[in-house]
Image 1 (cartoon, helix red, strand yellow):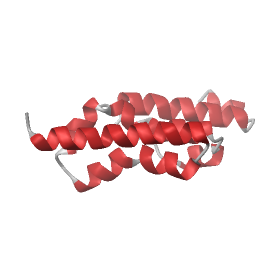
Image 2: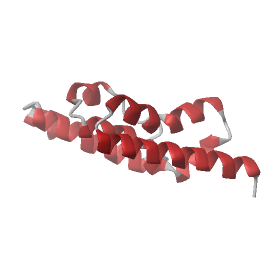
Image 3: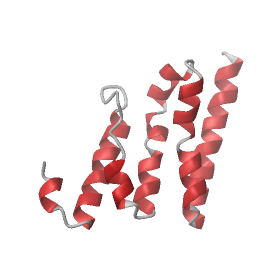
Length: 113
């Protein structure tokens, strides 16, 4: 097995764990920063393009952070994943988050579209 795969997948796992720890302690900035780590790593390392398909659930964590802290307008402003065919968990989580945001803000008609 490629050593870089082992090292970097542990790094992604660590960021995921730190994000959830920050969620539990109420630290929005740390939670979001660590939750967005897979996207930062993806931009810098083309090696991760195929790896993130298998870690789609990690890419969805920023949506959970925004829901947890009630950042409804941030959720609505955030774009859906670009590759909805490959990132299915992230896409489903994005629709879930946007549905909650529309409902909380009273835009029930938008939820149904």
